[in-house]
Length: 322
Image 1: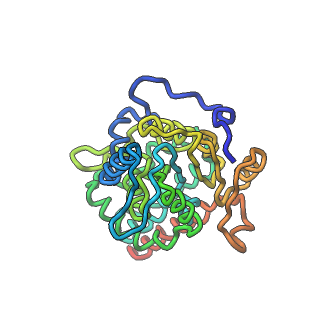
Image 2: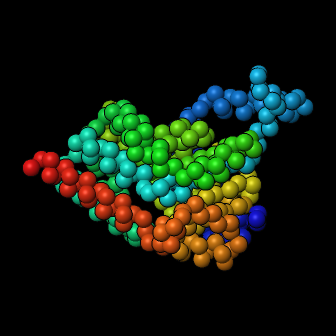
Image 3: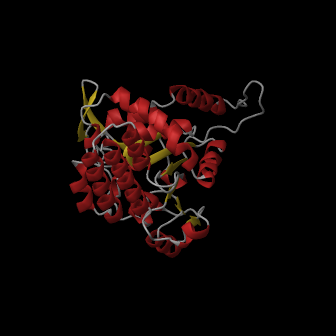
């Protein structure tokens, strides 16, 4: 169902400054370059393919059949936690770091509590309070080291938690010649790892500050959450020449209604009870890949289980120390 996104969104438009802001991030040029730098060859191929289509040529790949021409004005945007992946990616990442004795028990307990308050509440007051502690556990660590560990932890704890149904939806867009981005509060480095492993175009995520190749523990701008996701999607669309009326967004959370309202087609995936109600009232599509007891517990924030798991990891670290 495609409708005019402007009729469904109360979000203010991004001022036309010639340099769009991404989720309140001042260095938006740098952020957008990191988003599109995931696969420069793909971008070059899209440009040459567009020229070929304009010249009336057929697009072929050696050894393969004729591929559909790239659809350069349509794209798909996917939330990550509980939409593309079972549970919260940052928790899986923290679990992997805890197993490597990356931080102390008190660090883990504090991080778990802040994550629970942020993800269960999800209000802007929670976001502002959570901002200063969001990435404190990587302060002082080299960016290169954290990225390397992110690759390892993805293989250990995340790859088997990708929802097959959501992955198929992303592939559907790719097969149609459209670009696919992840849009998540997860740190951009981790979001890019997930996007690359899934064969997607790129990702928009929360940007951590680094100085001389090491994280400071502070953020650049704000956490990519709620209305900030809609702003980021609009800025990316302006940069990439996308027609948002032809784009699709997927999420599980009512916090992402601004992003879902910014595009022509909105899909609620494994929705919480509030988003399910919004989707029904607005005629949005609903896809639920949960089964059995998981599906029956719609509306119970899955972060509670993740928080308990994080606490268990912290307890395990303390036990090993004793």
